[in-house]
Length: 357
Image 1 (cartoon, rainbow, N blue to C red):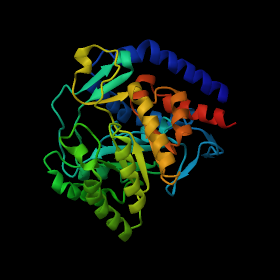
Image 2 (tube, one colour):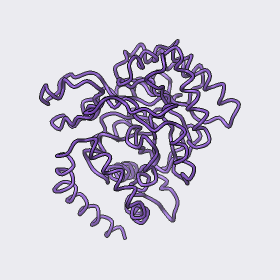
Image 3 (tube, rainbow, N blue to C red):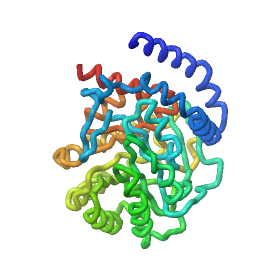
Image 4 (cartoon, one colour):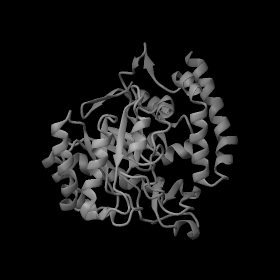
């Protein structure tokens, strides 16, 4: 069976490199995304049949070298899908079947919003990167929870944010609305205060503003079953500001930090100015070094007390191992998945097993 799986993935890799990737990369990124999501929904039964080709199980149980217990949750493997791909919880089962150990949906807001005007996603192929300025486009929390009612055993993170029309001084209400609505349907929460695509959102990373958002969530959590709450931060913060957030997270007993979101930096890019000058958050390989630096900083500064989900610039299996070695308990993919194709999570898990044998 292992032999046939390897043959399958070699054929899939050839098809991806020669046919699918060139075809997809010739079309507008957002149109490709909608096409892929639609195809995944249409052919959902096929994903269920093929999941054994992407997942690593031993006698139906999680592989012992991949399973991780982090903030009280048992993850089948440490490789997750970052928020932004499955914004509206449409294909989390299909993505799980591709080998992801957990899926983060969203960013989810209280009411639906269309996001920023199109065109709003750009490929920087020379840099193995993307720029997006989507702006929390989603169908709203009430519609999204309907899709999560039959989530099965897929571990789901709920990435929550505020609506664009909500002023920052009332932002805590939006986060609390999403927190309450999603509570019975997700396994952990990611408080997103770091997207560069909602005006003034990043100002909420100031520890006083962030505390005002987190305290109602923490209090609400105490009254319920207590689900993990994580903060998603920007790579553009100074080390001192990151340390302040870590101090506050430890004080409030926040369960972890996701580092990092996209960057507004455009340093040392190879792509044409026409692309690099586009507004929005940059993801992919240019983010790799800074993201790993922040993981190491948080890991050491918190004295290993604060679990970290490492995301940003994972474009190869070795990049994933570097994040884990730097102190990440779990990792997430997005841009790397876009560039490397459907077997990327599976390939990383295979490399993790190999590195631990």
